[in-house]
Length: 248
Image (cartoon, rainbow, N blue to C red; front, side, top):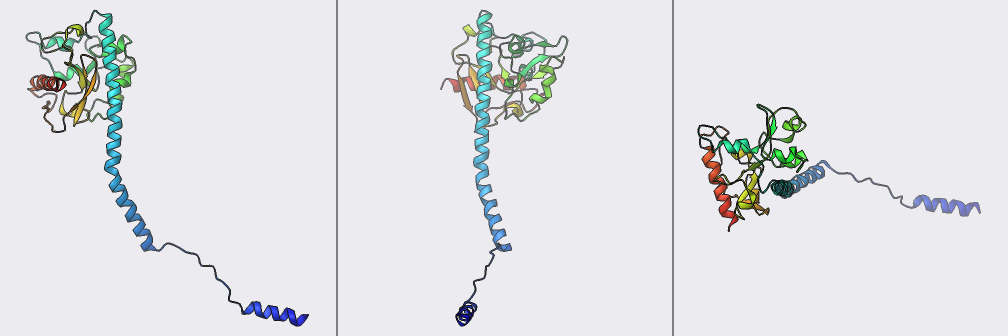
């Protein structure tokens, strides 16, 4: 019996034993993997950027649509009159200066810190969500954080990201008397940097439709700065060009 056991032990010891080998990445494997990942990220980034901007355009479109509908409700309650703007009225008074960026203003600090233009929609509870007045793609200095205290009642100027027309080139401020497809609201146009999406902008027409104005060819000539001496003429020309596009 012992002989049989010894024979089995001898046979077992003669068998080759399998050794466990642990596989590991070499430095070259790691470098190749990292390189592939970097290339893939580089290929995906333009697509991700495009998706992000498309999302922002949709949010901007929703915001300006809410402002447009609120403007219509205001006009309905005031016999067709659009929200009054002291800045817009100044452009038709002899001897008073008019800066186009003033129609992006919702609150005027001096002398009484009154709501003005689109700000009347907020002050009179037609559109009381202050962040609606801002575009997530805005590239200039007029961001919501800069004016949060003003929206909460502090006596400061408050700028929005949207350009209010206040009527048409003839000073008509009654919504019921405007042509059906004249532009009423737009992305900020006080300067080229206020045009939120750079390649185009969301527009609210007087029939309350919201359309995208394509300016990928950069044909819209906007003021280069707030003190551009030709700002008023450039802004009027921009409105006219947008109006022409609405009729196409």
